[in-house]
Amino acid sequence: MNEKLRLRFEKTGRAIYISHLDLMQTMQRAFSRAGYALKYSEGYNPHPQISIALPLSVGAASCCELMDFRLAQEAELSDMPARLSAVLPEGICVLEAYEAQRKCAEIKWLQIEGRFDYDERDGAAMCEALRSFYSREQIVITKKTKRGMGETDIRPAIQSLVFRATEDGVGLSGRISAQEPTLNPELLAEALRQLTPEIAPDFAAFTRVETYDAAGEIFR
Image 1 (cartoon, rainbow, N blue to C red):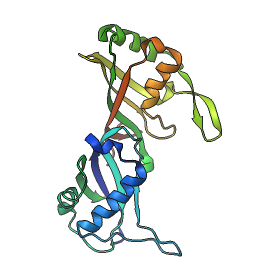
Image 2 (cartoon, one colour; image 1 turned 120 degrees about the vertical axis):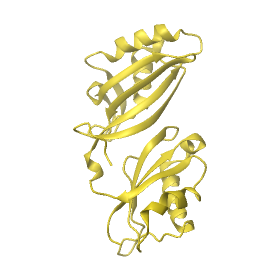
Image 3 (tube, rainbow, N blue to C red; image 1 turned 180 degrees about the horizontal axis):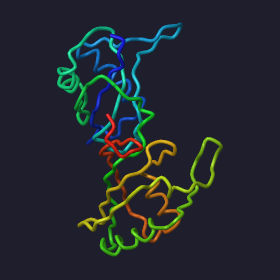
Image 4 (tube, rainbow, N blue to C red; image 1 turned 90 degrees about the vertical axis):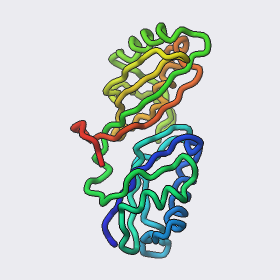
């Protein structure tokens, strides 16, 4: 089987603390335990043909992870989600397996959900302050780049952000750039810590919800 295949899977609960490298090894073992033989590359150092589209940061959850792979033999894709999920750790669940028709380079936007927890500050007041902050024309922060530390304007990578007051603080939903440029949702909180620490959350958590192409259509 030479076709490139694709999994869509969730990584939630305690599984959010599994690193990208460990996740790759976990998925490879799961294929073996479920009775699927991955196809290997040729050459002096063969490796399984498996890759995750947008590596997820440790501590972040996702309901829309995408992984491409090739199998060494024919397989019934409709059976694959249940068979793989049965041998994967708690928090990793395969939702769908199908033939990949599009390149993952076409992914442009990520829909995210998140929360900003405030121990002693009023959520409604923080909502208003957050809306004002993220409506700025520029949000320039200092972050690590390939060339070292440098200044980056993250505002062009934010398509939309909506805030709502909750019992513990503020909930948020939004759409941010997945690639070119890539915006790690954690930088939303980091921008507050650097530029307006008085409204920075005591704790922040994020979940990827969906992937979109440049036209705003759901990517599969």
